[in-house]
Amino acid sequence: MKGDTKVSDTSANLYAHLRAALPTNLDATAIETDDGLFYTWRDLDRGTAMLANFLQSLDLPAGSRIAAQTDKSVEALMLYLATLRAGLVFLPLNMAYQSAEITYFIGNAEPAMVVCSTENFSWVSQIAFKAGTHWVFTLNDNRTGSLLERAAHASDQHQIVDRLPDDVAVIIYTSGTTGRSKGAMLTHGNMLSNALVLKDYWGWQANDVLIHALPIFHVHGLFVAIHGALINGSKMIWMSKFDPKTVLRYLPRATVFMGVPTLYVRLLTEPGLTHGLARHMRLFVSGSAPLLMDTFRAWQDRTGHTILERYGMSETIMLTSNPYLGERRGGSVGFSLPGVTLRVVNDQCKKIPTGEIGDIQVKGPNVFAGYWRMPEKTAEEFTPDGFFKTGDVGKQDAQGYITIVGRSKDLIISGGYNVYPAELESFINDLPGVAESAVVGMPHPDFGEVGVAVVVPRAGVALDATKILEHLKSTLANYKVPKQCHVVAELPRNAMGKVQKNLLRNQFSP
Image (cartoon, rainbow, N blue to C red):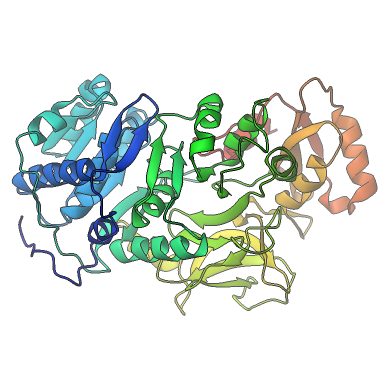
């Protein structure tokens, strides 16, 4: 491949380190799928080698992007790993994206190759070829597609391409809820450092088995879960999509489960979830969205396990975590991870007293290299002393536990006072009959902004919006009390379970 050298003993290529962690017995099962397939470690290494050789046979320029909008499958995972070992840049895309979104991503990233499902080939290929992409292949979740057909003729022996720690490995686009998505450039060094830290911090063990029920277009499923298993040489039980009954079926054979809060809520509706069923489990991890205290406590009651909540971003992978050994606090995301420097500051970037709410800024080897082709935006998001402005608002107590209060863009400034939606949501969620809530800011002629509460009742409960507001008036300072309250059946969420507050603002705007 143009401009590349072969791997050395000191290569920072992430795949070289993942491959070095393979167990001695390459014929042991690496992945068991929920439809009865078994892949050995040898299968994974051979499959990624063949795909990497095929990619290199296309003579792509160094740094070429490989965009993938495919259903979840082991072969899609192999494509990601093959892109790493070939020294190229992977671009994962959500299967939910439609033509306008794909047009933007392909136009912005200018991938040399796009991989999509056969079902979407006709319209995706038109967009890709129009944008200047030279190669478009198909890959389906049933082990078919032109990509596999072409790679089948490649050698299953491959020399991993050398990479430096600062070389970009992945571009992952942010959710874009406040404007156009930005492509966060994650390097081999970013991801390797985070994988090694989490392996130690979460106590990964030789006999661990991970239930992988997350999508693989996002940091949680693609990096935290998969890297965690691979860097430890641990088997994965691979679910094409989350199904609570299937998870329960595999729970006695696993030790680690990672999910978003929505998955835990759905698992709690299953009568079969018991202490006995979960007795072999070692660790339950939650992230990507806030975990309600009700869910936290209910999981303890039903399983005897305490969920470990952590905090990260597309731009940083994982930043903080509750301890594996020690107190895991509900409502907190724990401590900053080893190697991560975290500070809570005011508007002037000055550190504030313990326990006060401020902006969260971070620095560490896991922090991304910048936004793709957005040098001005990158410069804007970093402080002069090199801290990344996460955009999150939170506080840190005297013991070091960090609590996320919300996003700075969600901050409501009402009559000159700062109102933090997460604080109000915590009060509302504790009210009888409330399942969950979201508070958003709306323009107001007198106060500039006011809060609007959107509340979801528990099953079979009829909530009175007026009474909710009356209770809050008797409990909170007047400037914090939302001026409106709406009761709805459910809150809009993205694929990772985060509430889409921009949609709520549009829905309830005056």
